[in-house]
Each structure stands twice: as structure tokens, then as C-alpha cells.
Length: 464
Image (tube, rainbow, N blue to C red; front, top):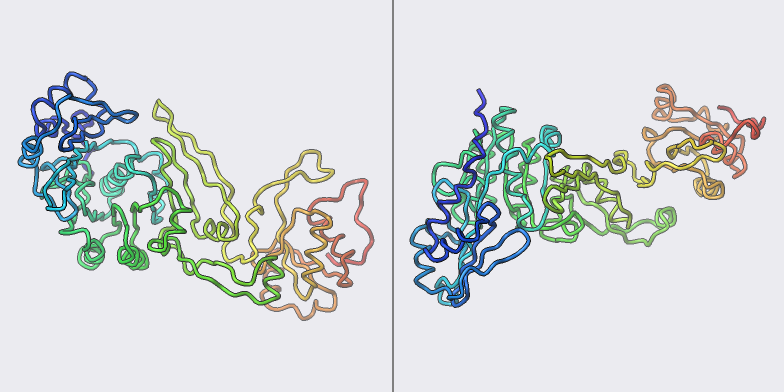
């Protein structure tokens, strides 16, 4: 039986964090009366303590922070790890240290950790799909909160075996007993950040998870470990350094998460067909994460559902708009769909293919681009015909992606098996009398709906 989500009442156990602060700082915070909005408290040696809220910072005292103030805090939290982070037992609060050259602590950032329940509903369909998901966004935008909620929902409500690789104890809290915010998910702690990749692999090999949740993939070793896990059929949900997909593509350390980038030299003919230079950038492999979600701000997300196609388009200098999801103040959210994902295995894919346009004579009807596969037909002439007619059509390289097949009468008896199979499944075959642009224009007008009552199809001898 699934454990019900913890009550959101004392979420974050804020009093436990306030108790470790020096008394004057705690009193100043209480006087402000804004503890429910508090993001973090900053204590820097020789400077006035500061409380930070979502939109501003407030000086708490005129007196500067002393070494005794810093020692007061460090004596009441857990030991600092090699990542200079400490915590408070069974809470999500994080205390991060700044050290001088002699490794003495000269500054502390006391960040409030809150388990916010119900935030994952805006992405629930994506999480339940089983796809591996990568979250991107600036610090403080809610990535870790989403990770924690996703782990709880998958473990408690979908009854999956979930392992959290918790390097900084931000997901499941400090101490040996995890915070109840992760539900029935299990947590593996990491002794030092440099070993995160090894713990990721250990989680798969030793504990048979169906889902692995990871915070902050930031090295090549962790990127390789993530690919290894995904190739074993385990769902990954993780965050990475970066604010959007474009920054990830340009990051040589993490580019493998979206398939990796390589330079490819094209033949002269292929370069002319693409109308590009001979050396181009292309995706090296399948993405480790099939879905990338950009957390642009609190309650506003951009979802890239087919990462491979988006990366391919960006490498060609094109853009596929993501799906936007926005949460309103009342908790409801809206979805603004982006263009449909490109068809798979189509090297000649045009990202405008799914956009619609006004068909001449169509009285406002909207039509999608028609995918045409030419067999034994002069491709350059067909491209010229499409351009001359300004037809909503595109040439594809694979017959299975085609809406129609164009060939010559002389080639009808020589059609290969794949073309025959496509024809048997209902894909129309147009047999042209000759390899002329005029013949191609006739077929394109018919395929793209560019003929009307006052523009009948001619008796052109084309077999349809």
C-alpha cells in the first residue's frame, strides 16, 4: 500500500535551521516576519548578515559577522564534506562553507530546504511515460524539488523501484534516515563528489532499480555512467549544469547527454543537395535523455519531447519551438504545444514540414507539407519544380516516410521491394512519362491540393 504524501504543514522544518543561527540573527529574522518566504541566510566574516528572499536581500543587523558567529553555526550542523556542504539531521536544509587559503571557514550560506508537494503534476504525463528526463535551469528555480517529487510519485503511486543517488544530500536530506519527502524511494549517499559516477553504476548493478534519480550531472565520467544506465533500460531523471538545451549542445563535457557532436565531411553531391558547406556538424549517437525540460522560471517550463530531432535541427541552424507549460497562481497549468516532432530516420527532414500554410484556391484550408520520395527521378529537377511552384512539399530519403512516390514509366517494372511494399500499404505511386520539370509540376499541383474547379488536372498521361 502506498504511503500517503507527508503533510505540507511543517514542510522544511524551518525552526531547526533557525535554531543553529546566532541569537541576534534569529531575532532579526523573527522581527521581519517573512520566514515563510526565506530562501537563505548569508553570513560572511566582517560583513553584516543578510537574509535573501525570492526578489531581494535584506540586511539583518548593522554589526558584522564574527568568527564566533560562524563557529556557533558549524558546531550545530553535521561535518562538512569535501564539497564544503553540511546539513541538519533529517531535514533538507543545506549549509555551504566558503574557506580561506588556510581552509578556515570565512563564510556560510544557510539555504532553506523545503519539500513542496504537488509540484510534479505539471510533468506527470512525461514522468509516467518511462522516458529518461533531464532538467535544466539556473540555481533556485526548483530542479531539486521536482526531482524529489518525481521520486516520491514513482515509488509511492506507481510502485516502481526507485534509487536516489544523493551526492549532496539535497534530495533526501542529511543523516542516515532519509527525509519523508522521498516516500518509499531508496537513497544511496556518495562519500565524495568525485565518486558519484561509481555510485550510479553500483546502484544499477546491486539494487535492480527501475528508475534512478540523480542531482547535478557535471563530469564526463558521470555522463558516460548515465549512458551506460540508460542502455540497460533504466529510466533516468536527472539535472545537469546549464540553462537550456543550446548550452548543453555547446558543452564539450556534457554533450554526450544529447547524443554528442561530430564533424562530418559530405560528398560534393550531398553538399550541393543540402546547399551547405562540405564539413558540417552532426549528432554522433542517440541521446542519453530523450526528453529535456528547461525550467525557465518558477512554474514555467519548456519541454523538448524529441531531443534527437531538436539537436539535429539546431545543428542545421534551425529551431524547433518546445512545448510550453505554465502554472497559474491557482495551481492549474496550461500547455502550449510546439511543432510536432520530426519523423524518425529522415535525413532530409525540414523542420517546417509540420507547419501549415494557406493552399491557393483552398478558401482558408490549412495543409501540411507533402513528403515525396523520388525513385529514378532527377532530384535536382524535382527540387526546382517545388521551388518554382512554391509548393508545400519536401523530398525525403526513405520511402517509409513518404506520402507519395514519384517515378518514371520506364522504371515501373523495376521498382524495388521497399517501394512495392509501400505501394501495397496505400502509398500512391505516380509514374511520369518523362523527367521534365513540366511533368513534375503537374503532379505537385495535384499532391499539394493546388488545383481547383477552375484548374482541372490535364490529360497529361501521368499514371496515378
